[in-house]
Image (cartoon, rainbow, N blue to C red; front, side, top):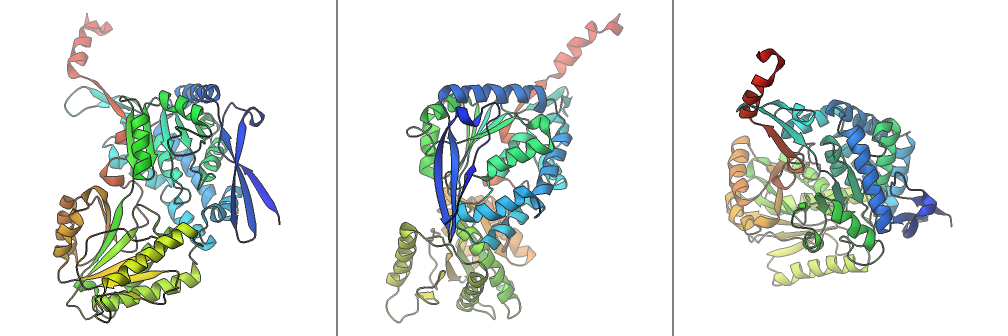
Length: 493
């Protein structure tokens, strides 16, 4: 058996032999991988902070946003090239560390990377800034005077590892607002962020020292390996952008100074609505196929993944028949993109969810039932009773609920307001906009087509917030200052 070892992270100014390394082990089939992650002392972390800040002050903050976008675009072009060494490594090793099917990862990476080409990044910036020039200098303000946007003095990223390469999103946000950035690797996916940092340094060397990628054990790093380095970094950060479980995010929030801007992204619940207009003999199978893709992608690990599809009655295809179509499509996708092997805890969670469905249904009444073989690596639960929005066990477990009207779903999902994010809708335009207004008021922040739930557009407002505006502070030159300066100009006499 061959074991491959990869060094993770990105530490400008620190030599490998100066750093303590901890090994994370991964396996998939016959492939074995050891990932060495850096464990920094407080002094090393402080030196890294100073180097990244100094480089950003010298290079990144003086760089026009258009130049930053061009550099990112060149890096993304290489990641989209399947012959490039970085892309080959991603296709080879991300399935091993994540456990996901290799073809699923390959297609997922291509779809994800395409959203960060230059044209998309320009739209991304324009989504948050009516005049993107404010990131480069003072620009006239409509009310008079001038305004400029400044990124954080030090932006710290704390990444989750549930979806491969997810770290790219926040790294690019930091670059676009010209912030010196240090990111903390997730133990479940410790590879991609360091690869991207190295690739960016290759395609645009002035950015080489403007970001770093580190690791410590646990999300908050209160104890365990790298705890003193984590404490040193959090003490220096003025903005922390964090992803993960709600409990971990709460613990991290409590350890940060009150003056630190904290931007958390925690657990969310996605769901779908299928209207009667989408349920004839031609449309319903196609919608079910798209819904199955949303369930299959990364085994529902994304915050935007669906847990329940509410399907309207009164159409040629009944909600129960839609559930059958969905089950058949999940079976087809399993043959193409096999679900990763579950560990004991994950398998127990799926079994418990399946049992809860079975226990709800009195024998023989057909009210609640599981569709398909009991041992299938996917599960579709069907119910004719309107039920609260609740998480499934993930790993391709999905509920389908028949409803008399999609409007009846709104108060049900509104009860989970703090966890709402993505709703996928298959309905006519008039119904789409009417439901969108109701769902937005209920707390939903993103409405997509079914089939696109797990593939957000570049520039989407994550959890209803601004990706870039939330990272910056605005400095204004008031009109009074402009007027007061006029008498002091050389031409005033």
